Image (cartoon, rainbow, N blue to C red):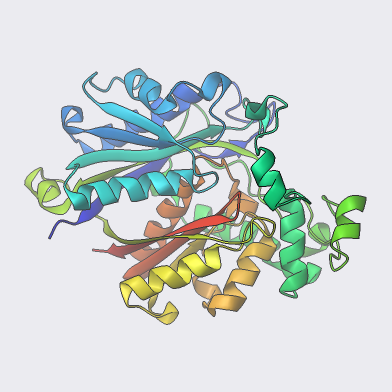
Length: 388
């Protein structure tokens, strides 16, 4: 039986996705190429053996258009024989790249493949690819005549319907920064980060934040029309309990286990099970709950058997609702901080989750790690890894 193994995973530092951010002067092709080059160098794999570079990128326009995975592979100096494809599953794009790579290895379509993602949100902002046009169409509008809502409003709806308080969200958010800084200080997450010039660490975690400071922030998504449509909303989602807009890139080398050992490559973990789910596109961010359940059923595991979880912190309410529904042990969730502290470069975030998940398993001696990511449009993917 073929198994897909992670040989290594690397990422750039994550930087604030705005003018003046630590990476904002870079071209996204160069940023991703830097990560690809570092991955090949660290693993020592013969680049001629790489069969594909599967890349997540959400806003595929302007500097990120034209199959950025192929451009970055060539910019990194990989042989011209190495193919590449770029995909968009919204915030789950890099995670989906890992899943497709592992599934291809298991199926026998690949032996050696790179998967990852990139997003430069300082340079190519969200929604710019819509070009001011209707991206939904008449039949979609007929099914959802009141329309979808902004993700921040979806996060508010989740907080209201799951009974997640403003205090709980702000305490969770403060803890995200504390966990991220503690992991950074202990060197637990440094293994996956490759410096980019003088940028050596993540720019997002705030040493001076606190529950009290976060509690003083005003709601970020308050809207009269949404308030009239959803009277249950209490307007408690702020910039402080939401993910940060970020620049970053990540990539992993995924190889068939027997091939890896024949090449002298040491596997760190196997990618073993996968699940996708769709849910209410107005709530938008809740599909991580059915995706997690589906994944556990497929793997024949209970939630208590999972040693570490990475659940993307798109908003604090999302993770808190997921924990309430799944019964996952909070101490096993996002132990090294999440997107509230570290940021969320949408096409690349799955790489940071996977890197932290693997680091946590290795640090604690855990066996199983589960990663899940909510996505625009009411979707989610979930992935199970097993540490060697």
